[in-house]
Length: 114
Image (cartoon, rainbow, N blue to C red):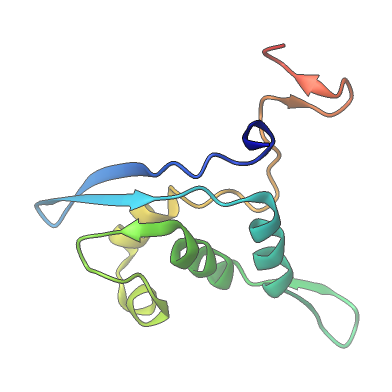
């Protein structure tokens, strides 16, 4: 069954922030969890227009995905207090909310590498 499920192996990203190297360990975002987060961040106004809260999406993804970081727990309070420089570094681990994996050809039903 493991060949059919997402590999939950931790990955890491490193970057320099304010002169210090930061190493952040993170896990992937499973398809279902991504869908749950997208649903949570989507709403409709009284005119039926769709509203997507990108700020909430990025925070929810990061809170789920980041396993270990120099600042400790990655929570709502922490993410609300960071500056643009750190936010842009962390955003690199968030999957695009409307992007399909590049290696899948939905019309052929198989991977490009096949």
